[in-house]
Length: 214
Image 1 (cartoon, rainbow, N blue to C red):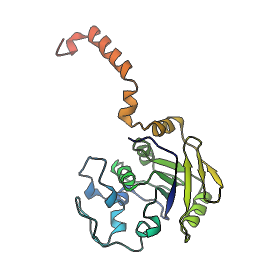
Image 2: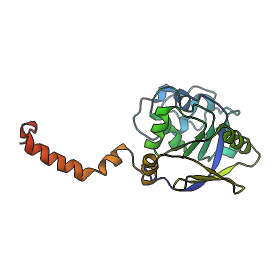
Image 3: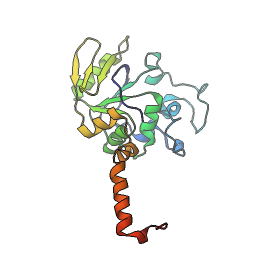
Image 4: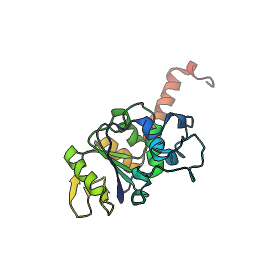
């Protein structure tokens, strides 16, 4: 996965609580195990007026004019602001895949479902927990006539708003390292490749009958 870089992006306001993973990417799209191609179907049942199916061409599908991501102001949004308990429901990893494939790099909310929260870090998305009052203020700013832009500094753990004001946030050291270095679970494992090889050599010597080519 790509390393997380500091950036400044447009904020899309999703003023909804308890957004579950079936809303993020409906069940009919879970047949694929690839990490790409889910972006056009993100929030499918809210975003379109017809029923979506895998491999559909979304170019000419009827859009729901009331849904926030269909507003031209948020067409290239990279930061999503939502209400509490974002990502609840099933543990499908397709949910962060769809968000990342659409282009979201950061999600701000008062709280997240635990499994979804951890899945974000494994797939290059930074989920940030902020106080409800802070989320209220960001949602109000993001719905203004001019889109809100926020600078994200993961190393410094700060968000910088258009007016220069800053918001600090917390992220555990392990998850921060994972994002900055661009390490998924496989990448983390490969950091210990020499230790793994040494163990395999030792194990082959200790128990050669376990190895077919011994």
